[in-house]
Image (cartoon, rainbow, N blue to C red; front, side, top):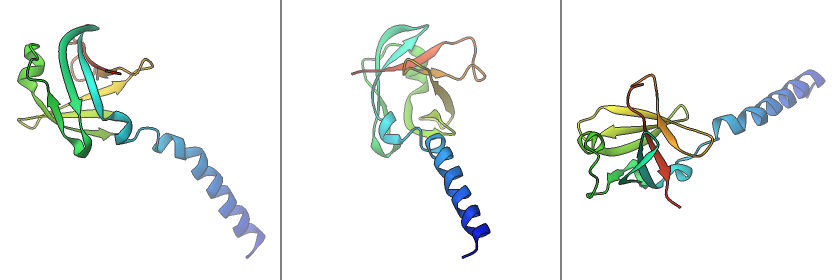
Length: 120
């Protein structure tokens, strides 16, 4: 093996190690769990459960009309964002903030502050 190809291979490995934390920063296992639904940073009393296999379920006692109408049934990670899919098929995207709260992407709807806070 030549010195040039060894150096190139070493450089590519180093680059992969630098990028690894960025690409693997968020795994499905890190997202699954129970969440309180927040509206304008206030707990609505609603609970959302994100389960393995990408299933989502809103607790039946939820009285937040907007979330009840949306009725999330699926979730996935798309480019580091949480994507919730409604029963009727449309999606809403959420970004995780420094406090661990998933907040609705302001580009989708800046007027309605919606978030999900993990329940310990």
